[in-house]
Amino acid sequence: MKAHRWLFPCCLALAACSSSGKWPASMEQEPAVQPLEEARPAPSGSIPLGGVETVVDRDDVEDLASPTPLDAAASARGAKIYAAHCVACHGASARGDGPVSDKFPQAPNLRHFSICRRTDGFLYGTLIAGGRAMPTMREGMTSQNRWDLVAYIRQLQKEGCTGGAPGAPNAPNAPPQGGTP
Ligand code: HEC
Image 1: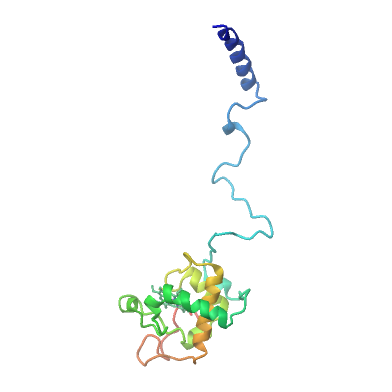
Image 2: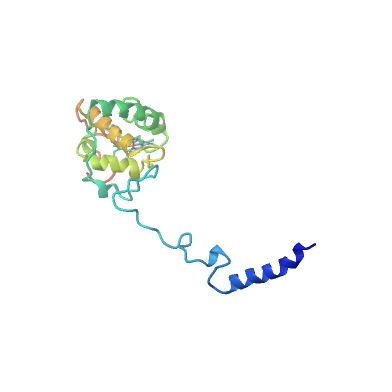
């Protein structure tokens, strides 16, 4: 029962501390940046880990160049990613003959002249921002994956750029596919 004698003065002392203003009683009262109040810029030179790149308009990254060579190794990696992510629309041969192209605006032959003329950065940006009908493909893909896909597209185009079958959306006289060439 002796402890009770100390309890009251202790509580008084604590109350005095918290009301003095010197010792904030709650963390809410401390100076702090509240959620959604202010986005802090990343320190210079920092590299995002696991974040997704945001490109609103693929024209904005037209001049971007790949930080790694678009060589045979990159193209081989790109071919595997293509088989998983792109084949449904663009088709196994990349001529726009994937099954989804029957139900959806037809995906173009990736060897089409208008796509051959694109810059690497524009193709890369298409994979982030999407095209006129093509959805964004950035989910679950790293920046390296996208450059590998660009390398694969360039590899396909080495077979020769084409206008596609007459009358098809990717025919020579058809308007350029997606965006301004
Ligand atoms: C849902 C169907 C669909 C999927 C999946 C898809 N595409 Fe497309 N893609 C299209 C259509 C439709 C177009 C033409 C119209 C446009 O630009 O949106 C197109 C256009 C393109 C172009 C031409 C862009 C230009 O304007 O020059 C490239 C390059 C391309 N796709 C690459 C890819 C790659 C690589 C993948 C896989 C990561 C992929 N696409 C996945 C439907 C698709």
